[in-house]
View: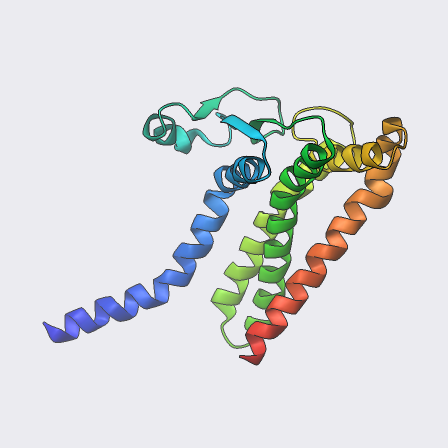
Length: 210
């Protein structure tokens, strides 16, 4: 009996990291949109609900009932996994809050994805299977932010988070918001990627030293 319990504990311990990575990937859209929503509320904005794509998040239907409709699973434009209904006041603080709200989930999942890829490639030598799974999970985490980056290149439309950040920064600097279409790929996206890569490098190096 003790041997069986010990075997179960060892199996559970080994499976836990894989389960965590699977959850991070499978729940990335609800997590992503929830961070948008939470950041909006924390910065003085108003979040009234989240719609998840029925095509890509059909398994999230129970969430709609559990949250009494705050999270909804419905039809969205092709390529859009989720949309959060957010409003900020048209003030300097409101604009700064809007920038943080739009940028934080993109930065977070990009940094997490880069970090997992870096750790996965390093772990592959000692733990080939886990290293491969880590690298794959990292790539999948980055896929959603890369998709929103692609959407942002087409201007103001659902999922245009990078475009929205650039537009708000231009507004605060009293520059024409029409420059956002050009500045998003030239400045906005590269800056976020550099910041995410730097954060991922610092965190993963610190993890290795501990």
